[in-house]
Image (cartoon, rainbow, N blue to C red):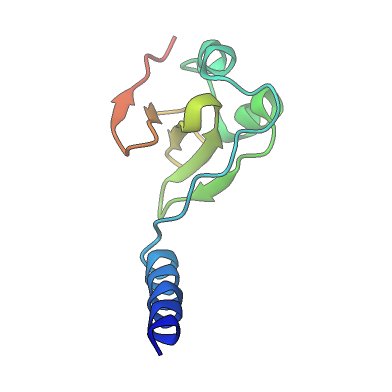
Length: 106
């Protein structure tokens, strides 16, 4: 009986963890590092140019804005924000713990 209760608790814990979005971040594509990506983020960067320079994003989101997310090394994610198809208005990097800092547009 104790084993059944323990197994049930494990299943419920796994289900609620996934439902709450607490999943491990996926690894960055081979060779994509913040050091390599950051110099490519320039003031003239558009969504089309980002695709040409960085490849397809790992995630695209936004409502009104176009936000491209690229996974890089050390569990970090680079966020690029565009007002439609116009040049970039903001860039940031999010650490694995959710802390975000702005990146300088060159």
